[in-house]
Length: 210
Ligand SMILES: [Zn+2]
Image 1 (cartoon, rainbow, N blue to C red):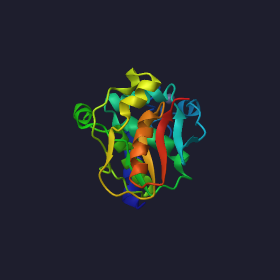
Image 2 (cartoon, rainbow, N blue to C red):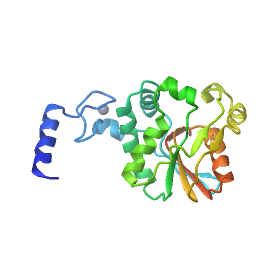
Image 3 (tube, protein in one colour):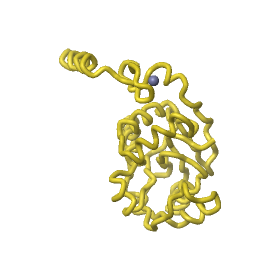
């Protein structure tokens, strides 16, 4: 970092010191999170088998991560998403996909929400890991009911055949999603990827339901 950047950073830090997003106290340097809140974040779950691949999640889906995800996803607070994405980075350290594939929203849902939370995450992690983000490779061509309103069995039927592949893919990809619940959505997306010749599909997500 050159001198001008260093001075800029110091000035910025003096004028806008980091504030913890969760409790409002002073944040750790460069983090919108304080030491206390950082220490009491939910545990990092062990990788979960997913066919030939693994589900890697930053956290168990519980307080306060669930609240941060809601702010990100339903209230468009992208800074909450970036904080979560950054906190999850160490979990993907040993994972070596050749590209990231965000789980797509149906066009109508995308228009309602204005952004796809999975694409935001994929862009962040793709930048950090110098991995291509294949945002147009997987398309949700069939509109599906909101998964959270359904039982596990209904979720599976709801998303079956909802995805289509639109461009060539490498042999090993990581699907990016915000929350891994029953795995129905990622499972349906993986089926489409495997049918298109992908050999291994991992999942990178912020949280998974224990
Ligand atoms: Zn705090």
